Length: 176
Image (tube, rainbow, N blue to C red):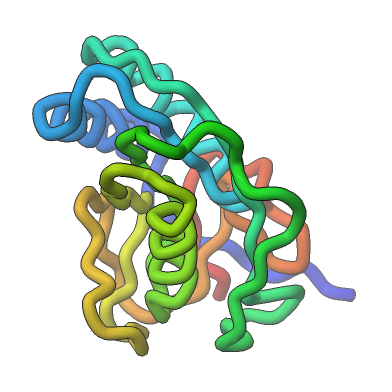
């Protein structure tokens, strides 16, 4: 299998600065204590950096994880979101910040936000590193906190993969 070429869209420095700015905006809007629910696998790097930035901004988030999937090993969403494993414990009666790597069709955030509200979260705010509005297929899927808005390109790096590759890249790049 040949390796794809990856062109940098957002450098390490750009990512770091944007995560700090997001943390400040989140700290101004949310209570000091809330539960951060990160969607695996793609958001793990972003969520880790965001959690530390939130601490610097004065927040004390409890951290949970959910694993959902709609891509498999493809470059396009299957259109079906499935929960893999158990739901996060302890969201009942809690404000929640739902963190994902990218908002594409809108299905994943709509599904997980609804799921967390059904499990008793008092409110769910959403935060994604990337937003691709041209691909939206679900109404009402606006993200509360967005790192960067991007065109319809396939991206990798900073936790985001293509067939389980490229998560390790310290930048977000476009597959060319």
